[in-house]
Image 1: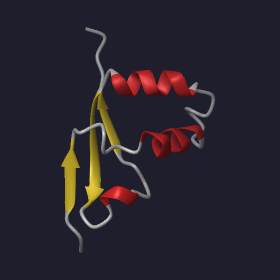
Image 2: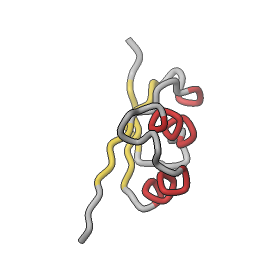
Image 3: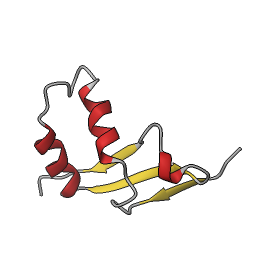
Length: 69
């Protein structure tokens, strides 16, 4: 079993893959790409990465903490 790295480094997060995944879901299929990118930029984002394939993440995992305050 490979180790998992959890990181808040947005440069490691595959945003294009996440957008594609969101667009394939029923609840975000119509969400505009620029809106997704803006929410990503304004959020604390954590990614979970396999240490052996961090450069070729197949399924991005994201957890956002968002607030209106």
